[in-house]
Image (cartoon, rainbow, N blue to C red; front, top):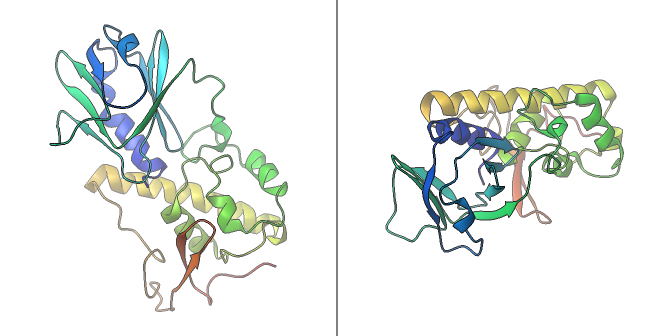
Length: 241
């Protein structure tokens, strides 16, 4: 599943369409699209893993899910789930989820968006403090707390902060928790810069690795509840319980 940095990069790549009028909108998804035809695309926003196309008469919320893809001025041989065609160029979504909402104003809180300049460490800490018995690995994937974080960001942030993924949130010392939150933000920015520069991110010290850069063995554990794998160093990452 694409993580926040990939969505932010997509938003920036779509900026040439802002201010342009939609000639034809459509797709085989259940959301009606007639209301978009002839309307000017005012703005594109992101929050976490969601992309928002903002028009004067409504907003399209788009989520890529596990296998979704958005192509610019390019089509596949399969039907488009959602598309916007302009006088010059088009945006084509495949295996995406879209729905119309009235406004983005109250939909999300920028204080939890890991790539937002309005991210609020104290606020995020307060959200974590409400779930002291939860494993920190699970909370790092909670989009209400760390909007935009996915498994790659989680694994790398935990490794770089020296925190074991099965640590109980309430047992992590405040200074260590601050370090972990900073690691989430810092790695998200590294992730984005790598995508922007090369189109991919391969800066991994623990994710899908057998050993870390110092030669320490990396352990893989399957988390059955969320059906994802985490990678960590028993030697480098402390378990707080």
